[in-house]
Amino acid sequence: KQGECTLCAGGTYQDESGETACKPCEAGSYCAVGAAAPLPCEAGSYSSATHLAAASECTDATPGHFANTGSTQQTPCAKGSYTNDTKQGECTPCSGGTYQD
View (tube, helix red, strand yellow):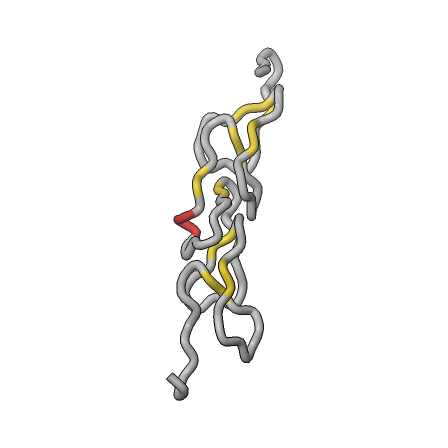
């Protein structure tokens, strides 16, 4: 249609004006309908996909792993630290009298 501009579909974005198409979203991010920029997956979640349309589509980190904001993959907790919950942005150091290897 010549009389209007079309919103970018979910999973795509356009950060420049005067363009004729939208760009795929970036890994570690999601792009809602009409997005002008990718938004990062929240801490505790990650994604390597480039078509996500909502934060809820990012994958939750599993117990024993964490994910920083905008992560494309989850990372195992380092020795001496742990997490026993999903969707964690960091691991917890073992307290005195305990260990994890």
